[in-house]
Length: 244
Image (cartoon, rainbow, N blue to C red; front, side, top):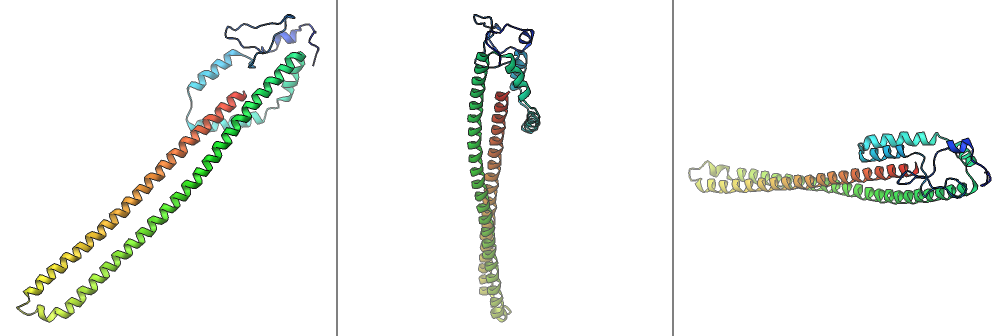
C-alpha cells in the first residue's frame, strides 16, 4: 500500500470510481482524494441494467441453469490479482475502508447462507414427513382394498353355499305343483343377494374415494415443494446479486 500523502497519478484517475451518490457527484476530502461510500460500486450503468433484469425474472428451470453457469464462472475467476492491483492504487485510509466494507458484505452473505441452510433443513424435514405420510397412506389403501376384497369374497362364497344347499334340499319340492311358497322364499333370497352386492359396491366406492383423497394430498405436497424450491432459487439469486 502507498502513503496517503502521495500525489494523484494517471492510474488513479483511470481506476473505477468507488463512490455512488444519488446525484452522480463524487465527494472529496481536503487533499482532493476520493472517499469510499458505504456501498462499493464501479459503474452506475450496469447497476441500472441489473435492476431492469431483476424486474423480469425467468422461469425456475432457466434460473437454475443460469445460477449453475454463474457459479462455475465465479469459481473459475481468481480475484487476487485484481484485488492486489486495486489496493496498490488506494491509500491506506481507502484500503482500510474497503476492507471494512468487504467484511460487511461477507457478514451479510454469511447471514443469508445461514438462513438458506435453515430453510433447507426445514424442507428436508418436511420432505421426510411427507414421504412417511404418503407411504402410510399407500399401505392403508392396500390394506383396505385387500380387507374389502376378502369381505366380498366371503359374502359371495357364503351366498353360493347357502344357495347350493337350498337347491339340493328343495329340489324335489320345487318339482311339486304346490311349490309356490318356495318360489316366494326364493324371491326373498334374491333380494338378500342383491343387498349384499350393493354393500360390496359401496365398499368399493369408499375405497376409491380414499384413494382420490390421497392423490389430492400428494398433488398439494408436490405443489408446496415446487413453491419452496422457487423461493430458495430466488434467495440464491439475491445472494449472488449481493455478492456482485
